[in-house]
Length: 169
Ligand code: SF4
Ligand code: SF4
Image (cartoon, rainbow, N blue to C red):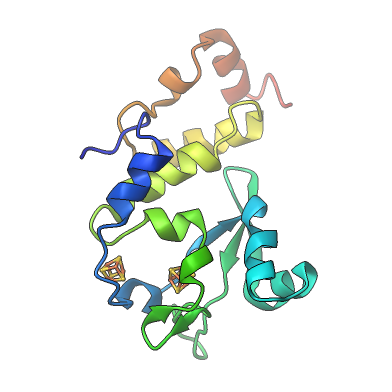
């Protein structure tokens, strides 16, 4: 199934479920977690939310939207390492793992990651988010059909003002 801007979350989950659970991808990196998912996963681990964030997550942002990156166990100077939740090649939080981990597989991972960012990180009501998305696209970021800025943002005049910084907020 082709992944486009119109792919629903249900469809993305179905595509992402094509996974043999070998654990390889999680050995070389970790997924992203949305703010709205933090409390649920902390509760599953029976940890206070603050402690869970401090010990397991890194605060970051994608297209000016706050998200968390799950910490990796990197060896000194290594550019990558296994996800903190990887246990014997299995996901230790499989039953509650974040959407990003559920939709991204090794087969369609690039498109699924792009789909995730467009749906859950790009905020067309935030000019800075729109500008960062525009830079991402112009610098060769993965594009899925239907996620062109002109299609997502039909008000051409406003889009021009945002991209030219005529409109900051
Ligand atoms: S949370 Fe689970 S699925 Fe996600 S990166 Fe870590 S081990 Fe992999
Ligand atoms: S997405 Fe691919 S690499 Fe990752 S666990 Fe599944 S089959 Fe293995």
